[in-house]
Image (cartoon, rainbow, N blue to C red; front, side, top):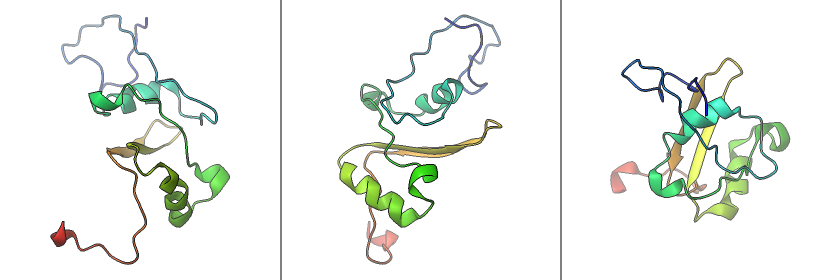
Length: 115
Protein backbone atom coordinates (compact mmCIF):
# COMPACT_ATOMS: atom_id res chain seq x y z
CA UNK A 1 0.00 0.00 0.00
CA UNK A 2 1.36 3.38 -0.95
CA UNK A 3 0.33 6.98 -0.39
CA UNK A 4 2.02 8.16 -3.57
CA UNK A 5 1.39 7.36 -7.23
CA UNK A 6 4.16 6.61 -9.73
CA UNK A 7 2.96 9.45 -11.95
CA UNK A 8 0.21 12.04 -12.31
CA UNK A 9 -0.95 10.00 -15.31
CA UNK A 10 -2.07 7.06 -13.20
CA UNK A 11 -3.24 9.14 -10.21
CA UNK A 12 -7.00 9.67 -9.82
CA UNK A 13 -8.23 12.85 -11.49
CA UNK A 14 -10.35 13.83 -8.48
CA UNK A 15 -7.32 15.22 -6.65
CA UNK A 16 -8.12 13.13 -3.57
CA UNK A 17 -5.08 11.39 -2.13
CA UNK A 18 -6.06 7.80 -1.52
CA UNK A 19 -4.03 4.68 -0.75
CA UNK A 20 -3.61 2.28 -3.62
CA UNK A 21 -1.83 -0.93 -4.44
CA UNK A 22 0.23 -1.58 -7.55
CA UNK A 23 1.48 -5.11 -8.17
CA UNK A 24 4.49 -4.87 -10.46
CA UNK A 25 4.63 -7.70 -12.98
CA UNK A 26 6.97 -10.58 -12.14
CA UNK A 27 10.35 -9.85 -13.72
CA UNK A 28 12.79 -12.65 -14.44
CA UNK A 29 16.55 -12.15 -14.76
CA UNK A 30 17.86 -10.18 -16.48
CA UNK A 31 15.41 -7.67 -15.11
CA UNK A 32 16.95 -4.39 -16.29
CA UNK A 33 17.05 -1.13 -14.38
CA UNK A 34 13.54 0.21 -14.85
CA UNK A 35 12.28 1.58 -11.50
CA UNK A 36 9.00 0.34 -10.05
CA UNK A 37 7.43 3.81 -10.38
CA UNK A 38 8.04 3.65 -14.15
CA UNK A 39 6.51 0.16 -14.30
CA UNK A 40 3.33 1.55 -12.74
CA UNK A 41 3.01 4.06 -15.57
CA UNK A 42 3.96 1.59 -18.32
CA UNK A 43 1.67 -1.18 -17.05
CA UNK A 44 -1.34 1.17 -17.22
CA UNK A 45 -0.92 1.25 -21.03
CA UNK A 46 -0.75 -2.55 -21.47
CA UNK A 47 -4.08 -4.07 -22.57
CA UNK A 48 -5.88 -5.97 -19.82
CA UNK A 49 -5.69 -9.29 -21.70
CA UNK A 50 -1.86 -9.09 -21.67
CA UNK A 51 -1.42 -8.23 -18.00
CA UNK A 52 -1.70 -11.91 -17.05
CA UNK A 53 1.53 -12.60 -18.98
CA UNK A 54 4.98 -12.26 -17.41
CA UNK A 55 7.26 -9.83 -19.28
CA UNK A 56 10.78 -10.90 -20.20
CA UNK A 57 13.63 -8.54 -21.03
CA UNK A 58 14.91 -9.80 -24.38
CA UNK A 59 16.96 -6.83 -25.59
CA UNK A 60 18.93 -4.09 -23.92
CA UNK A 61 21.36 -1.78 -25.75
CA UNK A 62 23.86 -1.80 -22.88
CA UNK A 63 24.56 -5.51 -23.38
CA UNK A 64 23.62 -6.14 -27.03
CA UNK A 65 24.52 -2.89 -28.77
CA UNK A 66 22.46 -0.11 -30.26
CA UNK A 67 21.85 -1.58 -33.72
CA UNK A 68 18.18 -1.84 -34.69
CA UNK A 69 19.06 -4.87 -36.82
CA UNK A 70 20.44 -6.66 -33.73
CA UNK A 71 17.30 -5.74 -31.78
CA UNK A 72 15.06 -7.23 -34.47
CA UNK A 73 17.17 -10.39 -34.73
CA UNK A 74 17.04 -10.94 -30.96
CA UNK A 75 13.28 -10.32 -30.88
CA UNK A 76 12.65 -12.76 -33.76
CA UNK A 77 12.70 -15.68 -31.30
CA UNK A 78 9.57 -14.22 -29.69
CA UNK A 79 7.52 -13.51 -32.83
CA UNK A 80 4.27 -14.90 -31.43
CA UNK A 81 4.40 -12.84 -28.24
CA UNK A 82 3.04 -9.38 -27.50
CA UNK A 83 5.70 -6.74 -26.96
CA UNK A 84 6.17 -3.76 -24.67
CA UNK A 85 8.93 -1.50 -25.87
CA UNK A 86 10.13 1.57 -24.06
CA UNK A 87 13.06 3.76 -23.24
CA UNK A 88 13.28 5.84 -20.13
CA UNK A 89 15.70 8.37 -18.71
CA UNK A 90 16.91 8.76 -15.16
CA UNK A 91 14.97 12.05 -15.10
CA UNK A 92 11.71 10.07 -15.49
CA UNK A 93 10.96 10.64 -19.18
CA UNK A 94 9.45 7.61 -20.95
CA UNK A 95 8.70 6.87 -24.58
CA UNK A 96 7.41 3.55 -25.81
CA UNK A 97 4.44 1.52 -26.81
CA UNK A 98 2.75 -1.84 -27.11
CA UNK A 99 2.45 -4.20 -30.05
CA UNK A 100 0.40 -7.42 -30.08
CA UNK A 101 3.25 -9.04 -32.07
CA UNK A 102 7.01 -8.49 -32.10
CA UNK A 103 8.47 -6.30 -34.81
CA UNK A 104 10.17 -8.23 -37.60
CA UNK A 105 12.76 -7.19 -40.11
CA UNK A 106 11.55 -6.94 -43.69
CA UNK A 107 13.63 -7.12 -46.83
CA UNK A 108 13.12 -3.55 -47.95
CA UNK A 109 10.27 -1.16 -47.43
CA UNK A 110 6.76 -2.18 -46.50
CA UNK A 111 4.12 -0.40 -48.54
CA UNK A 112 1.67 0.85 -45.91
CA UNK A 113 -1.12 1.45 -48.43
CA UNK A 114 -1.19 -2.31 -49.04
CA UNK A 115 -2.01 -3.16 -45.42
